[in-house]
Amino acid sequence: MRKFLSDSVINIKPSGIRKFFDIVSEMKDAISLGVGEPDFDTPWHIREEGIYALERGKTFYTSNSGLKDLRIEISNYLKRRFNLNYDADNEILVTVGGSEAIDIGLRAVINPGDEVIIPQPSYVSYEPCAILTGAKPVIIDLKAENEFRLTAEELLAAITDKTKVLILPYPNNPTGAIMERENLEEIAKIVIEKDILVMSDEIYSELTYNGNHVSIAELEGMKERTILINGFSKSYAMTGWRLGYACAPNEIIKQMTKIHQFAIMCAPTTSQYAAVEALKNGDEDVTQMRQAYNQRRRFLIDAFKKMGLSCFEPYGAFYVFPCIKEFGMTSEEFATKFLQEEKVALVPGTAFGDCGEGFLRISYAYSLENLKNAIGRLENFIARLRNEK
Image (cartoon, rainbow, N blue to C red; front, side, top):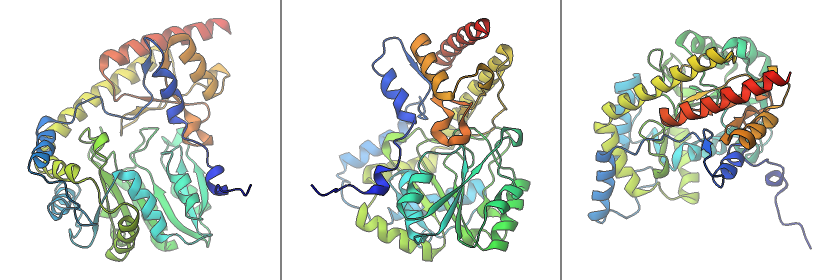
């Protein structure tokens, strides 16, 4: 029989995040710290607006670009929070989560053979999405000694005459790393000089703990060469609502909308009405959740210090990325043994790129009670490993 499956799809590895989550879901008394999903309920006033939209029969398609009111509120929000100016009619597209925006953003700009620079460790979707466009992923291995920030020297070394896009994944999943303004200014100079495009994934922009997030699109000369990705999942605890957005120059948004039009039609209508409420009246909710995450972050960093586990201090997202190289096991071996012996699921660093070897991703988007329980089990596990040496 003829082979029907696509070679490029067959060669893509499944996500390494879900493997341990699937196992732990069937394990009694197990704790999962593996999935980046807020443990908060979507704030009631946002849910209520979604319910009200259903009660009013607002179940029709919206325009391909998304509700006009939502695009206006996105524009207002970006101006208010990050000093970014995007036209609601021509420069904003509402998508099914940030993941769709990444996919169609790359498809809108890539020709087969173009190169996409992807700093890793980073979110699992970037490399597969680049491959599916026919691009060649060019991986930059980020370093713990640089706090997993992308340096100008690393970027320059990766650029060729085929480079089309740099993906900028900050605040970073899985490391929690951030890029400060001076870091971004160095990157922006190179981007402009080499005439490449940036896809800046800022889904964790509201979750920074050492000052406000800075977008590379704010910098002079960068708005016209940036596709900004953001959404509602992390900031407003709206993961299941599946809503994100992309902001970019009109000529790029037009092509992204064309793909979105044929593949998706529009983002979920109920979610869009709820998101209008989130942007209008959700700032206090975001502040409260950020404070809770920061408390958990500080607890974990302090716990690692006490048990002598190496981990740089992250200032963004809701992940820590401790180093386990001292134990002489791969990340996969450590995570598997820990799950079997202590019933706690973590994600091997290699799920986010080969340079994640020797690290684990721990999500603190879970209650402090669960974190304390899990860290107690980790302390016991590490003590046994050290005694066995």
